[in-house]
Length: 122
Image 1 (tube, rainbow, N blue to C red):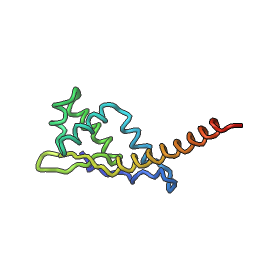
Image 2 (image 1 turned 180 degrees about the vertical axis):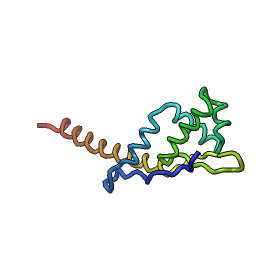
Image 3 (image 1 turned 60 degrees about the horizontal axis):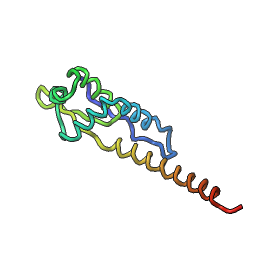
Image 4 (image 1 turned 90 degrees about the vertical axis):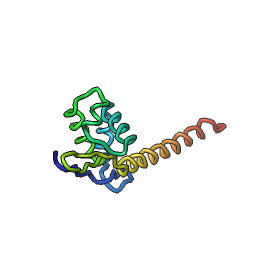
């Protein structure tokens, strides 16, 4: 398996296209990937074989999901002898969450303005 090279940090703050955020959200759209990421986060690090033992999918399927997560920077891997150990990388999750928080604040501001207009006496 090739070394997992993460994409740049998401840029939904107006400094770029936000393509990295799109890729993170697309990767997280799959329920098995979210479950795999949760399992990996709870363990700290693990092998694909150990992860597959707790999931209803094959080791090969786990590796494919880990590859997708690795491409978007959510997972890193290191070789330890004959094994490859995987761990969660929080940077992309943190950056994507920050974008989502900014988006929520913008909507809160918009909704407050609408509420203000709706509740103002004419």
